[in-house]
Length: 465
Image (tube, rainbow, N blue to C red):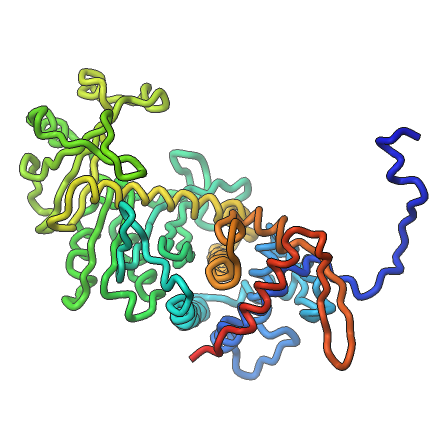
C-alpha cells in the first residue's frame, strides 16, 4: 500500500451514527427568517379558509428558500432539508412544495409580495441599527445618504422544453424576465417572468416592475430613489414616469440610463470641439489620461423627452473585445463612445459617470440568480414558474440579510456558492442536556465560529415592531 492510499487502512463505514445534522450551517438562516417575521408573514399571506395542511405553506416556502441556498435546483431539491430534520423538523415533500407553488395564483402572489414588503421594512429598521448604519451607496468615496438605488435589467433564460410563454428570442428560445435589485443591500426586489418575445425596452413593463419594486421599499426609502438601467431603459414614457415621481410630487426620483447612439447622436458628437472634453476619473478618483467626458444635451433633438434630461458621453480607447462592433465615427477617431441620460442637475460629469458605471453591479445580481434557480424553471405552467421566481427572490433576500446582519469578513461579501460550501454545508452534532439542545460544530472547520456568531447575532435581534 502506497502513502497515497494508506489513509483507508483500518477504516470501515457503518450506519451507527446518531444525532448528526448535515447542512447544519443553514440553521441560522432559517432562524433569521423566523426572527424577522418572514415565516409568519408568508403563512398569513397563503392561508386558505377551511384548509389546514400538515405543512404550513409559509413554512414550506421558507424551507424551500433555504434548500435553494443549499444548492437545490429543482422542486425535488427540497429533500436536502431532511438532513436538518433533527433540528428543524421534517420538511415538506417535493409533492407538497409543488402543490404550494401551484396554488400561488395572482391573488396569492400579490399577498406574498405584500408580506415581503412588510418584512423588508422591519429588516431595514435593523439595518439602521448596525454599527455602520444602513449601507448607502458610495460614489467617489462619498455616500449617497438617503437614496435608494434600483438597478433594472432584463435577462434571457433559455429553455429546452415546451413551457408556457417560451418564445423565440434573438438569443434562442425561452423566456425573458425583468429583474430589479436594490443596490444598497443586494436584495432581489422583483423577478417578473415574461414571454421570450417581450422587449428589453418595453416602457409599460419597466413602469410595472418599477412600481412593484418601489412598493417593496419601506415608505421612508421611497422618497429619494435613483433608477438605473442600460440603454433599454431610454424610453420617453418610463423616464417621464420617473421624472414625475411616479405621480407623487413629494418624491424626488432620478434616473441614470444608457442612451441610444442613433444618427442624431453621431451628428451631435461630430460637432464637439476637442477642448470641450474633460478627463474621466478612475476607481480611485484620479483623472484618467485615456478617458474623457463631455455633455452633448444642447446638441441633440430632445423633443418629447422629459424636461431636465441630460446626455453625457464617455470616450476611451477601443478595447479588443469591442473592435469588431465599431461605428464609422469610432473607426475614424479611434475611440469607443458610450452615452448615458440622467435627470440629475448640477453635478459634475465625472461624478455622474462614476455613479452610473456602478450599475454594472446588476450583472452580479443576474449571475447569482441564474446560478441559483432562475435557469431551472420547473414547470410547463407559467404561473408556477412565476412562483418559482418569487421563491428565488426570497432565497436571495435571506442571503443578503444574513450577510448584512449576521456575518462579517469575507463571508459577508462572498458569492452564494462560497457561502454554501464554507458555511451552510458544514455539519454538526446535536446534544441534549438539562432540557436544552445544543448544536456542536467541529472547531477544525474554518467557518464553525462564523456559524456560531451568526446564530448569536440573530438571536439578539429585537422582535419585529
